[in-house]
Length: 334
Image (cartoon, rainbow, N blue to C red; front, side, top):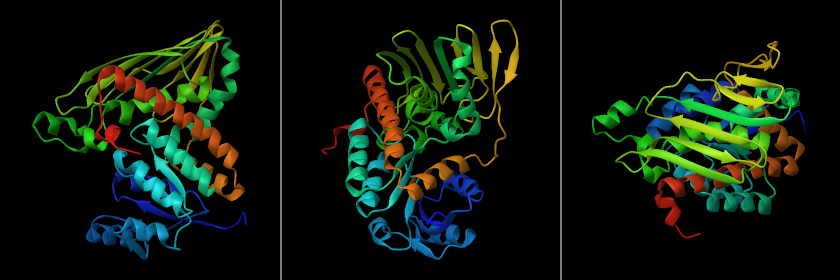
């Protein structure tokens, strides 16, 4: 049982799918057996590149097929819930990109469907499966009582210049449930919730763009005895590190979207590197975790990780409410 490979299908032929497959090349239990694309021509070209026989242009046909055990979903955020639920209902395990869905209502339905069909559902939050994130978690107690979390990820979007020219690409479209919070801010919020749980209060600010999405934002989080801060952007760059501040020291995380390098600086000035050996194609770590859950039929661990995903989406729903960011998906009936 544990030696068997897991047969994957992928939805999408974009860059992120290609990065996913580069990561998968490091995972011996992974085999790609199917590709979905709306365009048969693109699907064929992608399948040829990866030596895949099964090409689908119909999602339901792919979900019903017996050529896959699991699917990786890398479509626009607005499609995540519908596509995830389709595959779960056909007893396929689902690894779905973040942001997990458009809102918490969708996430709850995804989780319910996974439980009903007794299959594994996991959000593809790659950073929390990296060796360095795990080292940070294991060493957190060494900095004493934690008083502040600071997450920073600001990256000028490669599509923003086009936006300023009047060409609205997918990254800035509310109908696709995109924007800075969903695409960038999630990298700051997710590790905080993983390490410290759900905050008690939230105060959010954002710069809204004319297309209807947020270009950048900042959030204050209140916990029982600590606070959290997140700053994120698709319209500016930042070289700031992220940080966890404790009474006995602090942990510096160089790039929160990578979680490759981290160190402790103790109050007396001593430093200790927490960075672990890190495979460059770092999506391999989430794939290994997902496959392990499938092979062990570990629905309990899966549900624990889904609780974090649900809390993150609850937070992002509240942030959107405060900044006035509404997606068409919010008005859909269940």
